[in-house]
Image (cartoon, rainbow, N blue to C red; front, side):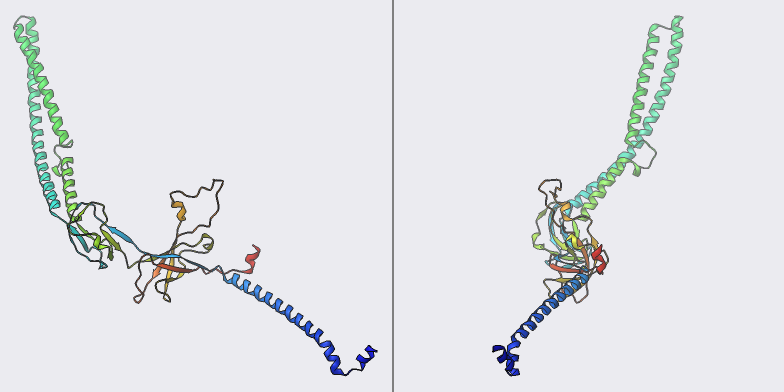
Length: 367
């Protein structure tokens, strides 16, 4: 009876009876369709990300670097004057500060006098050597005459033509003159040695003269170094550390000099991101102090060793508790600057992105 009633019901009533099942089926189909579409989109997105990834080497472990010099001098003295002020831009060779020059001038005068005296002494030694040679020649002739007299007396004494005393006098005179000849020869050799082995050579080439000339050159060099100049163009800093009248020992830093016309970026990305990084590739640089401003650069070099290779206590891989840690490799990025760029300071934080130009392919998945 119920089935007959349902069959006799109007079409609208039958539609209301089957509609919830149809709507549920549609919702399931829509849900599964959305799941499938999401999976497709996810796979497509991951594939696109992987295919387009690996091209750029980016890191925020980067800082502005520049040549930084602690200005000093290799001579000691009192500071006479300071020729620059804090933050001043200086050119190469510009005077930075001066030491008291009086001690250095006196040292130069003393060295010059010593050089002149050395020349006189060597000239005197040359004359002494000539005199010693002549004395040796005269003594050698005297020894020859004594030898002849002694030989004659030796023959005559056997014939009792001369007395034994005359024979002994001739003998001892020969011995004395031979000793004098030896002493004269030794004195001549000593004089020759003081002349450097050759008496006829120019005085300026002799060792003693060269030593005195070297001392004069050193004194003149110290006098020049009493005036300290900039070794490269840049900007001075911490000038107040040095004051006139202060005693500055040799090797003591006076103040700083920073090269401002040739800065670079020192970055240290992870070693795993440097597969395709090569010198000469272009880079994009941003500085934290100037958001929105972009610098362009070129990867200049990749360090041949990581920082831990220069550590006092490098990693000991043979130890039982060794843990592998991804290393960072220093890079140097040369900055391309323009006239309108903001001023940079060494040590500023930066972010670097290097375009390696590498593109991935699906075939890489099967390698």
